[in-house]
Image (cartoon, rainbow, N blue to C red):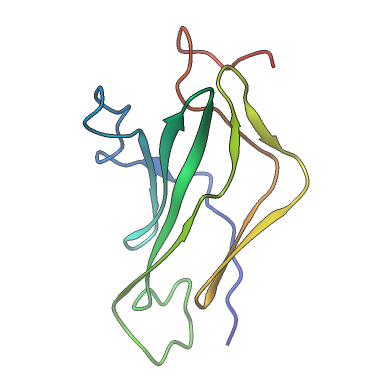
Length: 126
């Protein structure tokens, strides 16, 4: 059975999110919602580009709010490598839908603006 839902407006930035620390870790954005669900993006940089190196979606099949007729229970995790890349000093903007297919899960990005490694803490004009 298929379940379709939007990332809720009340999703929160989880505490495991980070801005990265020097060369020891990459920036990580983790959005949490519902009964233990999360969507995370791990960023990396190389030369003059940055990329969303990995998208990870963790979901709880025991959550009857989203998975009404689930015959399975517990947490599941799916991931996909390299979602998008952009030049440093530019923002990535997805107006049309971009679908990422993973095992048993499809994530669709639409009307999203992202930028990693911000200068002065603000989005680039580019």
